[in-house]
Amino acid sequence: MPRPDYRSQTVIVTGASSGIGAAFAHALAARGANLILVARRLDRLQELAAELERKHRVSATALALDLTSPTAGPDLKAAVAGAGLTATGLINNAGFGTFGEFAGEDPARLAQEIAVDVAAPVQLSSAFLPDIVAAQGFLINVASMAAYTPTPRMAVYGATKAFVLNFTEALWVELRGSGVTAFALSPGATSTEFNAVVGTDDATAGAKARTPEDVVATALSHLESRNPGPSVIDGRSNRVSASVGRLVPRRATVTMMHRLTDPARRAGAKKRTRV
Figure (spheres, helix red, strand yellow):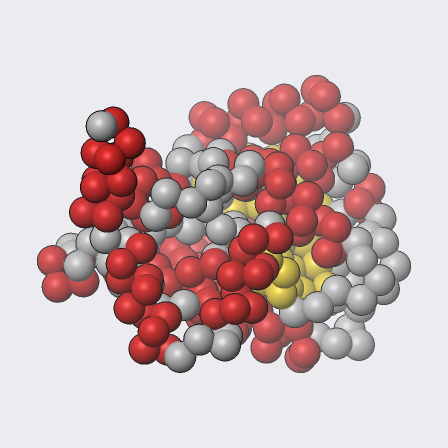
């Protein structure tokens, strides 16, 4: 598959106000792509759009959208059309997690998590795929290393990312021959606002974090490769972990993950370090 001509692309990036989404915006603008930046925080989007236009001389349009809305797909489609734009690429990056024993979680917050992490990527992919197919563009859905194992204390988040991974890999094979590149991107621990939103560093079990720029470099290298596969994992250690995980019985895997996400384990490690 030929390398994308970014200068002919208009790419939607959700969750673009910070972290991996903002890193995608910077990297794509540097390659000459025009951007449609989507998040709830309009002020931050507008600042980013102005910076990208000034630095890279591309068009960057900021659109505020609440992805928990049951009409997020058609709402964004209407907003993009209203701005006189047609998307040729879509990066479903927005998402968040919750941490804690499932029985004690807030049902309303879990519903929002499912809406943003599952329903929104499906809605937006459905809304924009016809234009992406017509342009022979690309679709990247951001999953997670949590997609590869059951994740106690993040049961819903892990399940949502497993959905994203399976959904996107199915699209990859459905879209073969269309000229569209579609794949799932799975980061591990990354230096973003994720843990702050979750409310604890236990969400990433103390794993060494990669940078958003590392993650985006992995994604764009995959996008630009000769024959991109249905998914890509960021980071060598994460790829090894996923490969090993396929060989371990599910019972052992989920038990191990329960230990890794135990706040008492990290608290004990910190205490031993101070002694």
